[in-house]
Structure formats: structure tokens, C-alpha cells
Length: 230
Image 1 (cartoon, rainbow, N blue to C red):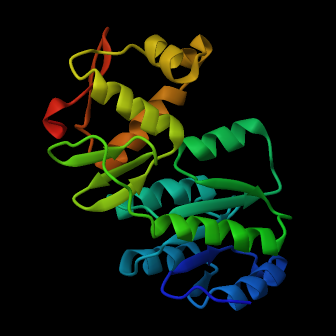
Image 2: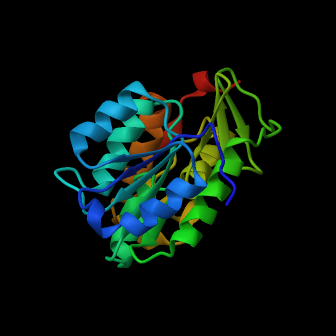
């Protein structure tokens, strides 16, 4: 089995005895696999090292996998790693919350190790892709085809909905969008405006690019801050 060097993969679970077969398989496929079993150990590692992919059990504690994702994004700021969360809980609400928080893949705990290996390799191939810029800006370059934003030379891949929201606001930089308008434009579903979904996406975008990238005004909604774009 061929290995892929020079990419750090962090596997975090507080019950490693339950996933030892998966870990053994991944160790054979990836030379830079780091296994941690506590929250303190996890954050100590990622604060002092660059990680390309994180694999986290949803049910770790005290922060669960979704909380770990949010904290990781805040630590890495410009360039978050790809994040895979696994769980035997597969209800739609949990998966929506996970993806809205920045998780890149939400898989079942019984996901076959060989399929997890292929998923990781697919994500690693994306790291090697250098996209051609489509829209230029003062600080940011937006690639509409690859759903990528480049900030100061660093490639940032956003969840599809967040990318569409950022692009919509950037293309209409003088307009405030209400939650209802965003729900219709991005989801084609007015009911989304009644949930916290849009708030979560706005929060995630601000966490990555800075809290001032999207302006908000009571009674009007959200607008891009034009200073970020030409």
C-alpha cells in the first residue's frame, strides 16, 4: 500500500480501543498520522503544528466534534485543515449543524477503513491543486469554479453554501440582503430564514476572514464590506 508523505493527519478519539483497526489501517497508508486521545493533547498539537486533515469522533468531550471544529477554525484562522467527523448518530440535524460549523465530511462510525483512506487521499489531492483566479480583490481572490478563496496566497475552501453567500454579497456589494432574501437566493427555501442556519454561516465566514468582512444593519440585513474587494 503506497504512502503519501509530507501531510499531517491528526486522529482524535477518547476511546481509541474502539477504532484500533481503522488506525492500524491508516498508519500503513499515511506516514504522518498523529493519534491523540485527549482534548489537551489535541489542542497542544494543532497550536504548535500544521495539520492538513483532522479526523474527530463526534462524541469526544468536554468539547464534542462540532465544538472541536469551531475551535480549530478559530486557531488556524486563514487556513483550516480538512475536517472529518464520524459518529453512529446520523440524524439530519446533527449533520446540518456539523457542515454549517465547517466540517468537510460527516461519516458513519462503521465507515470502512479503506473508504476512509480513499476519502483522505481525495482531500489531500485538493491541497495540491493550484486554482486559476477568477475574481480579483484587494485582499481576496475568489475562484468560482473550485469554491476557493485565496487570502494572501493561502487557499481556503469554504462549504458550498458559505461560498455562495460570500460570492452573492461580493457581487452585489452595495446591497443589504435580508435573511429572507438570502434564504431564497442560496437555498431556494424561505423557511431557512426562520432558523439559525444563516446566522451560523455568517458567523463561520467572519471567523475565517475577520468579523468586519460582512456588515449587518438592523432592519436591512447583511452586506459585504467593500474594502475587502476591488
